[in-house]
Structures are given as structure tokens and as C-alpha cells.
Length: 269
Image (cartoon, rainbow, N blue to C red; front, side, top):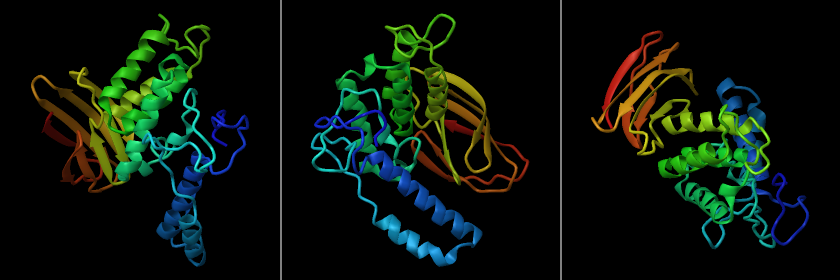
């Protein structure tokens, strides 16, 4: 199932080889293998799980360059829909982070949904799209989608709407908006932290504090000023570690964090 959507040439939501199903299975198997290796358990099963993982269907890309929602050749796309479940490999998954072709195909999904009315859809749908755009390091798209949410889906009391025509409150876009701002400013994986990965040029200056990252790392402060070209950050960790630091797509190498000792970093924007 690709939740709530059906192929363009079928009325059934029950299908085969939905891309989201494959992505979840792949993530589950990969995490299972990694955890067992890290904990030195279940060693006798790891090779069997690796074979299972290798036999999962490959993702497919359409002629228009977008990631197929169903990896079955007889099923066609249904672009005029509010759901984007097949973007799982980019968000909330992480496969696209190290797979440029997959990332491009995910980005094209957002483009195709927008060409088919995404900006007139639900506030939560835009929230999903903008978080994915941040993961794909697309600052222009982040600004466009957040602006649409702010203009069309936010009431004076800052409650967000399910659909601006119906006027029904739904918290999803509230949470998605905040999450997308954080994703645009800080991305992390265990052993890696990236500052300003998807900063829109319209966000000329700003500051965010106290962001807890994956891998027991905290960005206690991050501030930037595009006009002056300066930025700074304070990193903190309860354990000693040497994460790789990236800033706006550029790799700066590893930084040495000593347990309990904040590290201030100054950089050019």
C-alpha cells in the first residue's frame, strides 16, 4: 500500500511493490543487521538477512525523472494526490542522503506534485513536502513551501489548517513547519552534523539554540549573517567523539569534541 493513493490506472489502493513498503523493509533489515553487528549478537542470522536485503526490489524512476510510487511496470502514477509516501527514502528515511540519483528522483516527485496541484492541497501535505525538500538540501523549495503554508494555511492565532477552503484546524502543519525550519538549519546522522544544509537566501540572518542531533550531539547555538558573511556555532557532547562537520554543503573535516566541554566554531557563510 502507498497510503491513501491508488495508481492512475487502478481504483485499488491494494497493490504490489509500493515504493514506501520497499523502503521500510530495506531500512528495517539494514538497521537490524547494523544493531546486531554493533552488539555482537545474532551473528548466525546476519548473512541470511543480508541475502534478504539484497533481494528486495530496486527503486524505479519514471520517464519524467521522478521516483515511481509503485515499482510495478503495469501501474501508472497518480500525481494529483496529496500524499507523497514514496518519498520515504529521503524523509523520514536517509537512503537519499548518500544516493544523488535517488535524491534527484525524489526532488522530481515534489516538482510533479506541484505541477498537479500540491500547493492547493492540505497543510500537512505541504509540511511533508517541505521537510523532504530540506532533507534534499533545496533551500529555494523550502522557502516556497513554507511561504505557502504561512500565507494559505495559518490563521491569526497561528493554528494551521487541514484545508484552507474548509477552515478546519489540524496540528500537522504546525509541527511540520517547525520541523522543516530545523531540518533546513541542521541535519545530522551519527558521526555527522551539517549546519545550514538548506538555508533559503531570504533568511539573511538568524539564530537557533538547543537542537539535539543524532549521535549524542547538541548544537547549543547556531547563528548566521549572510550580509556580513559570518556565522558561529557551539557544539556539545556528553561523550568524547570526532564527528564530521559540514557547513552549507562543504565538508570541513572532523572536529574534536571532549565530553562535557562546549566547542565554539566560527565560519564564513
